[in-house]
Amino acid sequence: MRTVEIIVPVYNEEEGLNRFYQAVNEVLKTLEEYDCSYLFVNDGSSDRSIEVIRQLAAADERVKYLSFSRNFGKEAAIYAGLQHCDADLAILIDADLQHPPELIPEMLGSVTCEGWDACGAKRAPGTFSRLFTSINNKMSTVKLQTGATDYMCMNRKFVQAVLSLCENQRFSKGLFAWVGYRVKWLDYVQGPRTVGRSKWNFRKLLSYAIDGLTGFSVIPLRVVSWAGAAICLLAVIYIIATLIKTLINGIDVPGYATLLVVLLFMGGIILLSVGILGSYIGRIFMESKNRPLYLLDETNLEKDSDRDKDER
Ligand code: UDP
Ligand code: MG
Image 1 (tube, rainbow, N blue to C red):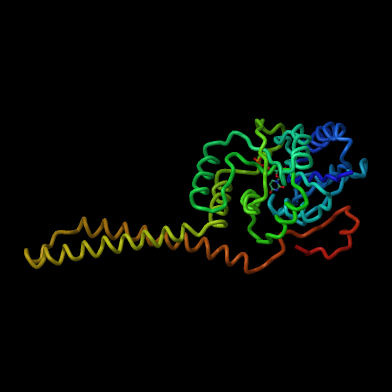
Image 2 (cartoon, rainbow, N blue to C red):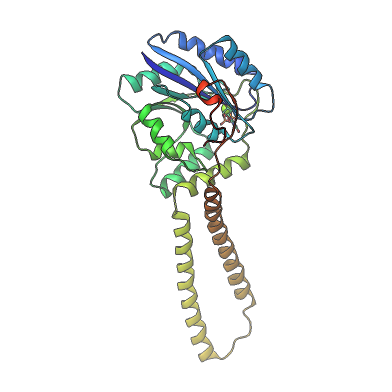
């Protein structure tokens, strides 16, 4: 019998966790040909999520959990979940029921019977997501699927490949695309959150998008170089023209507007370039520390309870 692990990142989901567990359980009941278990990853929730998870674990031995020492972010939770999963198949799913558990049987079927390496869910993308994906796909060799989510079922090979990418600043959607294995996409309609709040706001989304871009492409750096080269060329033409004009007409004093425009424009371009350079240097800085992606505080996985806590 194939084993399946349902990996659930959890951050302040106390209100919805029981309902989530019941909804997934309904679906798992229909899947007798698989041996399913849960792996909740409590990402440093500040509410009672961990207590709810402990109760679930006490009542159902298929429920395993990891709990972080603080909030390390969903990407770290996904990484930890995959790292501690030793089932044949892993399913990543959000705890807020925005990822319909009804898709699980079809996902499992696609990977086990149809020979796909992974099966993910995609939804109709919002404007921001569409814009980001199209910019990313123009700039990067790693092409993203529009509307793709990280609700995904993957086989061992896929999980191992994702884990082998051990960078600190993770952008899972990009990593899943980077590994290149065959992914089938199922369409779904995403409902609103029933309880709790989304952890995203515009600022977080924007920095996530910038992380995604700078993590997978150095084209922004090249664009800046090309812009610099183009401006140099224009400047040379302008210098020659001014020299000739001065030689013919003598010194022409007015020119305040031109000076100001050129100065401001150049200042803008230089600051922009420094900013782009800076974001890459920032990434190098963060990676060079080589810190663990998360720290475990508590788990009911036997083999990990006494394992070194600060492993990556
Ligand atoms: N999550 C997490 N750590 C965080 C933020 C979110 O583990 O720092 C979890 C959250 O509990 C949920 C999933 O990631 O299970 C998706 O979060 P959310 O619903 O806020 O994101 P959205 O659906 O708006 O993309
Ligand atoms: Mg959500």
